[in-house]
Amino acid sequence: MTASVAILVLLAIPFLAVWSLLAVAERLEDRRELTRYRQIELTDAIHRELGAVAAPVMRRRFSGEWLVSMTVPLDRPALVASILQLTGRHFAALPSGERFQVVLTPDTSHARPRAVEFLGPRQAETDRPIAA
Image 1 (tube, rainbow, N blue to C red):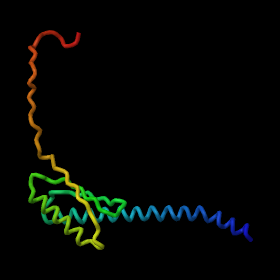
Image 2 (image 1 turned 120 degrees about the horizontal axis):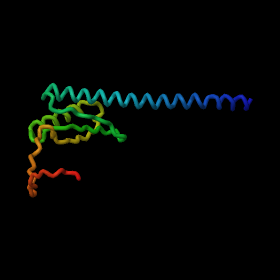
Image 3 (image 1 turned 90 degrees about the vertical axis):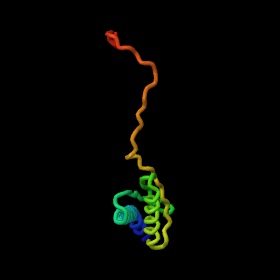
């Protein structure tokens, strides 16, 4: 009797292992879908109120806290304040008062590089080839 129970347990171990791995994969996929859904909600809220001024990227930390990072034009403080207010309202409307952290990166796409003038001595043009 004990031998047949031992055989059944040994046969059940691979099935339980596969089942537990599938359960973990499903939880991770649900977590990814929730992150994607929340990111789309926040992006739509910002675009609806202010236009396409920022595109937030969200990720959830292992502590459960949300990390929201976005590139914003720091030379327009009123716009940045509006974006932060919208983000705060978005998270206040979520259930269970989830915590979040916002990381702002300056938008450098409109910045023009300054022309750099070389101030070293100029060499005179010659008819000699460069390489010997």
